[in-house]
Length: 255
Image 1 (cartoon, rainbow, N blue to C red):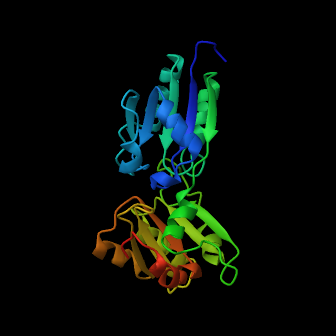
Image 2: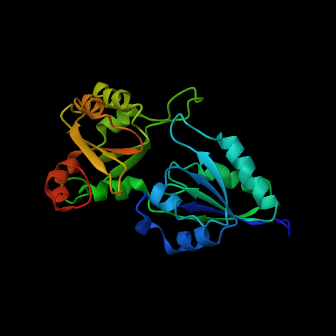
């Protein structure tokens, strides 16, 4: 490692509730010289960034990237080579569909010291805030996480829809609002019961959280009727039925 280089921390900010930030994430944000941030951490966390830190907006909502991933990598590397302590602040966990692996590889190639700071992934925390445990002893002992927004440059999908349709556990789809209808149709086309319960959770863990519940056959139409927008998590499986029982006991969320 070059002696005059700074250090980079790839920090997961969790699902959006600022109280779900880890202690380490909070400390690093507060002491960072440079913060390169996504929009996914949410206003509450982003507004808490220190005034004296240099802030670089990397955007990263689906279809609305302020910077491309290559430009983000370049910015991280450049600031570290200036000798700065850099926080790359990401929603959820850096290594769960967060492209943290790509950023870490870029740092390794440039000989820059870095550290991963895991965050609470939205894949489990957002359903929990909606009264949906992703596993339940009486319903399912399996869960799988998939991305609803694959790399558009890939020649073939990396998702095995046939296997997913036959999967007996909970399916959690991240970043899938834009392709909600296509994803539901793929599951049904491959044999998934159209009456399988589905929950769509917008802005999970935040004060304006909203939950839309339907089935594979109805969820896309319901989402259009309600004007569902990203960021949102889709949960497919029998555990969604628990939202009607456990969700009623939760406060601070719109159902």
